[in-house]
Length: 478
Image (cartoon, rainbow, N blue to C red; front, side):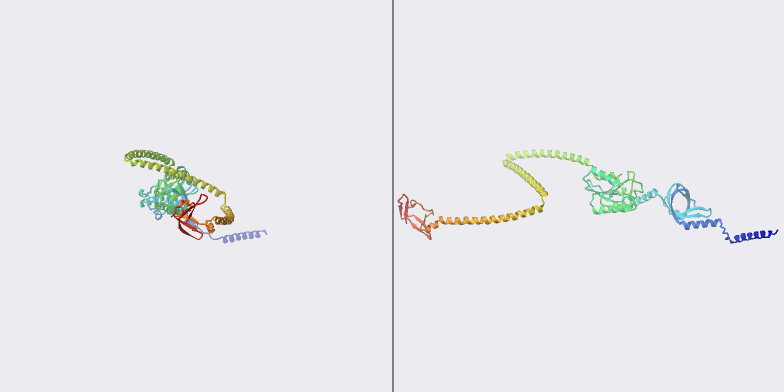
C-alpha cells in the first residue's frame, strides 16, 4: 500500500509529457482539392516554363469554341495538350491524327480535373512534312516570279573547254562526275568549287560558289551536284538564295542533285536538270566515240568532195589547156609551169633539208647544252681566248717582222735591178712614138720620132741615120 502513490505520480508525469509533445507540433494546414491543383499548376508553370515537344497527334478534338484538344505521344508515353482558339488560328497546316508535330507550350495542370497537360502556344510540322510545305511555298513563290520559265533557260555549249563543278570535294558525286567526264571527253578541263552540301553552312557556301563562278567567267558550263538523300539532306538545294544565284548566273547550269526521284528547287531553276550527278556529267560533254565517228564521216565526205572537185577542176584544166595549146602561148605557160614545179620541188627539198639541219643542230645544241655547264664553257672559252690573243699578238709581231725583212730585201733587190739605177750610170731608154721600148734600130726609119728617157728628164729626137751594129745588130743616130 505504501508504493501506490509513486505509481500514480509516474503515470501523471507521463501524461504531462504527452500533453507537452502534443502542444509542440505545428498547426495543421489543410488544402482543398482546388487549392492543391492550383498550387501544382503554379509550381509546374514556374518550374518548367515553356518547353518544346515532338510527338504524334492522337485523340484530336475540335469543339465549336475553336479550341483544340489532343494528345502528344511517342513510343512509351503520352501527354494531354490544349491549344486555345487565338493560337490555333495561326496554324498553317492541316492538323490530323497521326501527324508528327513540334509543339511549344507551357506545362500546366487543368485544375477542374487535376489533369496534367501542356498548353500549346505554337505548332508546326515536324520532319519532312514541314520541309515539304516550305518547299511548295518557295516553289510557288519563285514560279510566280518567272524563275522557272523556259524562256530564261540557256543553251549548253556544244563543246565546253572547261567545266565547273560545285559540290563536296569528298563526296561520291564528284568521283562519279570526274569518272564520266574522263571516259566521255577527257579533253575538257575541270574546275572544282568545293562546298558543303549538307548542314547550316551549305546554302551560303553553294550560293557564294555560284556567284564566284559567275564573276570569274572561266568556265563554259557549271554542274551543281550532290548524292542522294532525304529531303532534309537535300535541303540546301531548296534554298531561295541558291535559287536566285543560279537564276542570275550568266553561265549555263546543269543540276544533278540526288537520285532520279529526288526533285529540288535547284532542278527547276537550272538550265538543265539531270537525274543524277553522273547524268549531269553526261549532259555537259559530248560522247568521244560519237565525235570520232562524226569526224570519220566528215573526213570521208570531205575526201569524196575533194576528189570530185579535183576531178572537175582537172577536166576544166584539160579544156583550158587545149584552148591554150591552140592559142600558142600555152607552150610557154607549160614551160613556166614545169619550171615552177621544179623550183617548188627544189624549194621544198631545200626547206626540208634546212629544217632537218636546223632540227639536228638544235638537237645537238640541246644535248651539248644539257651536258655542259655554260659557266664552265664560258671560263674555258675565256682561257682559250686569252691564249689565242697572246698567240695572235706574238704571231702578228713575228709576221710583221718577217714581212718587214722581206720588204727590205725586196727593196734592195728592186733597187739593184731597177732601170732607174741603170739610168744613173748614163744609160737611156728609147721608145717609139707609140711608147714601145726600142731594142732593135731596124724597127725605125729615118724621120721617125723617138722618145728618150734619161736619169733626170727626157727628150724627143728625130731619126736621121740608122747604123748597123758590127755583130749583126743595128744602131741609130738621132
